[in-house]
Length: 381
Ligand code: ZN
Image (spheres, rainbow, N blue to C red):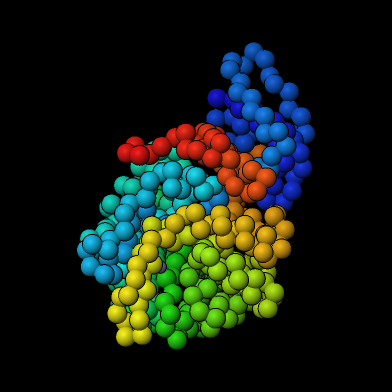
């Protein structure tokens, strides 16, 4: 399986310039200003990008692959995601999670769905756990899951500062983080602790408390929904200044939070990531905690937020790309393999139109989207 994409304007995410990309199987084998089409090697597929911009496939580290929600009762459980809902938005790697409901949604189902999506063509990982502490696992505990189950790269999303959390105290969360740390080391994984942070006034104070009272490194903690309130964003800036990486949930106003982090708090862009919360429920509660509305998150929000950061926030493409590529790859210990266009990396590529829509997507060298349409669909799409 040899492919050459010719005349591409490559961002890796830093600008590489105009040239060709040679793909052997599922990997990028070579980049050069002109790669001649080899003869005598069997079929070589040549694709002319006609000068279009090609960027690394996006990595979304927070997607509810088998749905989530249920905060308004069984009829409000959100649906399972389908392959094209991911690929049409330029995402080629996802990390799946459960959510509020660790009872009717379980880790076995999440693991099976992650394996299914991998077979359908993209790259997948999962967090073990649900909102509660002690949390849901596949084996006896988080540490064993990290060591024994290939797809598990951390624990999450653990809810803190939220009325839907198990109201864990700092000691409980610290123990969980310690399990993730040791399990990650022994399993050769990042051992992340991915927090769902609610709107409660304590915000990420429990994480600061753990950092003060343990030897755990800040880099294993990846709190998300950090743009939920202005106060939480400010805490996120302090967390980032200590070397942490804050995750912003994509959405119509999300770019404003990112711009505040960059411009007002001078947070380096390398300390910020974006994720979609795709297929999670987006319940709205009144001040009394009563459910007053419900929506569903979409992976599409990644693309929109990234574009907002560039178009409305005036951040250069190569910088904005980091939010969904290299920065996330660093969280997941996938540097050089995902989120970049370099020799030896997986051939996860997105070709953009002039107005920054997705035109073509290759995942591990396979064409998934062509002309903005899914040419590879999930089994039941
Ligand atoms: Zn969440």
